[in-house]
Image 1 (cartoon, rainbow, N blue to C red):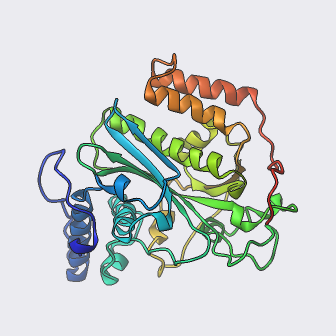
Image 2 (cartoon, rainbow, N blue to C red; image 1 turned 180 degrees about the vertical axis):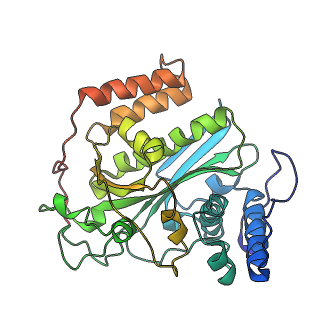
Length: 333
């Protein structure tokens, strides 16, 4: 297993194995031990060499010397396979920590990372934030592409639903149907995650904003290729960050999401507080929001605190009514 994954990272916290709950069920106990081993494996991996091993020029690459973080944004095919396995393993390990994925199904399938993307066709986009000292992944967010072989109209009965739409039993994209806008220009926000094991401090505070900046820069640079973002999220996490970044979210209330027991992600919809489905066009003034966040993170603005940055973002958001229908910016679908 280790031969196909990045190297182990130096420890930056107390040593010791992950604590595993006990179970009277022998199979359950084995599953819990397996899960603990997977979590521990991914806690020890280092991605320090990842920036040098990306194929071609990444969509976004930034270093934050103030907090010792490095952020990269790139497409599926730009990541060497062993690194992509590791990144998808980080996603799996974080969901296991949060009990948002079935430990039993992970054990029964001997999974140590989420499924790799199918080669060819449209690609998803990944943003990872690393600790520059240890090389450990400190945060992740993804933009997952449509599975349609060709771009279809958003109201096409033949288009594949995104996972959020399937889980919540709703159509989020049909309301945005218009000429020149297709399913290959819609991306689902996936796994907005901060490392659950990281200690409180400057890295802990800055990771979400580095992820937002990397994802936002992808939308700005790729222009018409990304026109709509959808997904499901909780109010105090991704929805809050997206609103502060200028997204005019259309949130659907009152859904009853679920997945079949055979789906490893079924536990994510068995919580007391559930994620809400949302969809939004990419705002035309996203570059302004990105500049504010970037200047705060690199220390080149007059913003002297996190709260000052949030206040500036919020003030702009309150003055601007974003369009519900994305503006035509050229291109075909």
